[in-house]
Amino acid sequence: MSEESQPQRKPSFGSIVISTLAAAIGVQSKKNQERDFSGGNIYHYIAAGLIFTLGFIVCMTLIVQAVLKNSGL
Image (cartoon, rainbow, N blue to C red; front, top):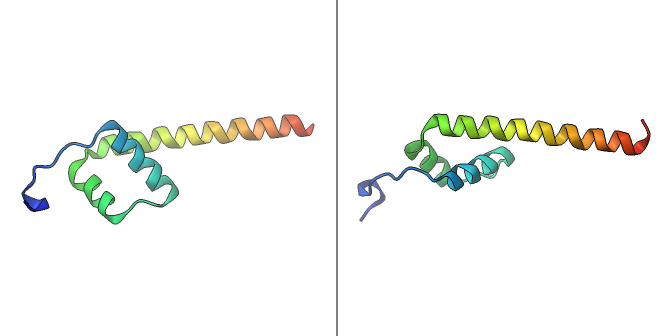
């Protein structure tokens, strides 16, 4: 059975998280990118990207604050 004749399955929560992390660090494969674009809901990926970005900003802010506090500045 070829890939084109198989029904498209919706990506799982874990699959969306993995794809978001891979895309964020730039290691998303072409095959996975095509799978995401063909089978996933764009709004799920946008939400995952926004949540990741917000979490990244919060983590970086906390790290910088801790470093500055420990350095005496």
